[in-house]
Length: 414
Ligand SMILES: [Zn+2]
Image (cartoon, rainbow, N blue to C red; front, side, top):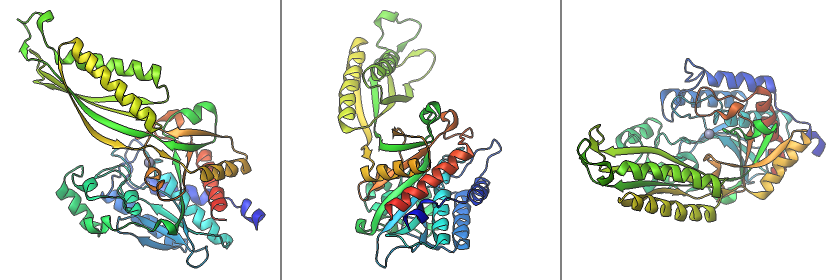
């Protein structure tokens, strides 16, 4: 039995045919993909997914959070379910691999196990999770599935409440179903996700497989530097309270400090809004949007203290007032040690070169991690490009990832 399982491989031709067919749904002329959650393309992709699942002889199911699942009852009656999955939605003008690869691979794994006719210690479920990219709200489907989605998370959806309400209605859902879609953690054997790395590390080091150790935590802030509006022609430069100077000096200081003190972390100033924002007035205020990401709470806390100190110092240097508002904080998530071990064992068995790395991007896995043993498998992204039409993973890497997903799932569902 052990040996019979170990020789199973995905059907690479069928996997490719499906991946290409899916890539055509919402395709953009530049080779990318435009398939935001609840869009027409997204709905078509989900319909296509269910057709494929049914053709493969799998059961299908939609939960209250709109998650689309294909099921293979290969475990004991009343036994737990091992979830394999990712997401079929994309960012606007995104790439073909982000999310889609993991869903098509999960479906392929179920079909291979079904065809082999094996019984396992757990049932298998290939799930397409709703709105991972946060078209309305980040991780809507995976948070719904954990039962940890609270009303506050969907109170101010991006794109507005009315559009959100209509999108849910069109999909046969409402806020009530979303908030009651939680699964019993005891019914879950774990969650395993294959995904592209979306960064350059694996490709640069010539590794085939990345085993994710943890997913970064993110904190985001609005920081307002407050000066005084003055005539841009008549006010001598040494007498100005120019909000631009504090905001600019702070941005440069953030880069320098994070690179020297927190080399594994990143910080980004993504926006600055100037007031009044015209050529001939010294800016009275600049509101800067900043986020930073690190692997653990200790580093996040230390960075927050340090960066806020820098903001105060730069504001003081230019005689400016300062107002800081924290917008959002998502905690870092550790991947399960046993799942990491299974992925390593699978990669080794397949003769693949693997390494351990953290994820700088958020994923549904961070939502599932608190309720069941969770892990992620990364495959290389050519030049690290992602969330654009340039997103690319070599087909061999996709197949390697799918076989690692298959073998790791078999180890976990043994
Ligand atoms: Zn993704």
